[in-house]
Image (cartoon, rainbow, N blue to C red):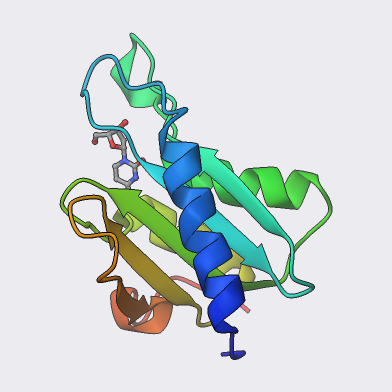
Length: 133
Ligand code: THU
């Protein structure tokens, strides 16, 4: 895993919190924000986008990754996810992250204590993942 600077870390956390403000979550009332840092230092945010047909909901982490990929990025240095309570990415999002990275630091932000960010790694969250190559 590449080392990220404190400045990049803070930028990523702020972007996840900002993206959370734009969450579309009228069904769960559980806004989630995420942000991904690309290897070349750019930050892309994403929020959860729900749907009246619940299964169509897109999680914040996947929105962030898909936005970055759409902008031409495939190499990532870190991801932050912000929720009230500080939860790690769901299983589906872990697999999507693993498509682009063997391991990745994941910053878990609890909006109730923004100053105390937890850090886990993708390899820790998704050991022995499905991978054909
Ligand atoms: N959600 C995310 O955005 N990311 C996760 O990792 C887990 C769940 C969203 C989906 C849904 O809009 C809401 O949180 C409640 O499950």
